[in-house]
Amino acid sequence: MMKAKHLLLAILTICLFSLTSFKTFAADEIVGKWKYTVSNVPPEYETGVMTFEQKDGKLTGYLGEAEKTEFKDLVVDQGKVTFKMDFQGGTLTFTLAQAGDKLSGVIVGQDGEYPIAAVKEAAKN
Image (cartoon, rainbow, N blue to C red; front, side, top):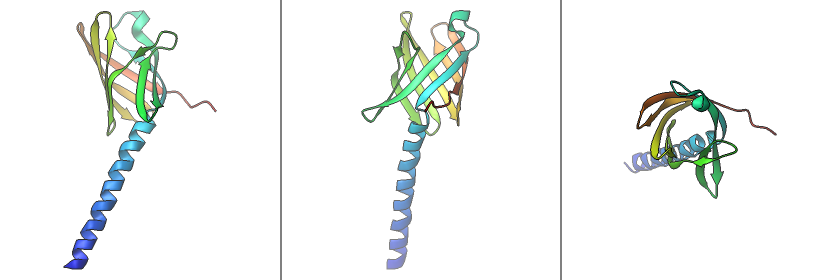
């Protein structure tokens, strides 16, 4: 019985470390620049760049390069990325799924829902 308890404790410990490592890996994997395309919007909003960064141990992000609009309530969890952004007096809510170097999902705003897809830029050395 004692061996079974030790084995169970060892398995639980390994699982806990695995889950912690997975979450860190998923958050780190999104760091970088992503080129996006949004459908069914005016041409000036169709394409652009969004950036995710690690600052002081915290994940942050913003849209744009010259004029940066910061993301609010940014969460990365098990391949799902969500955040909000102020836009023209309202709020846009982004819900994205990450699959490697691709993001896809939807932006929800006061005027409707808009499909979005993004591809991660290769890191520059």
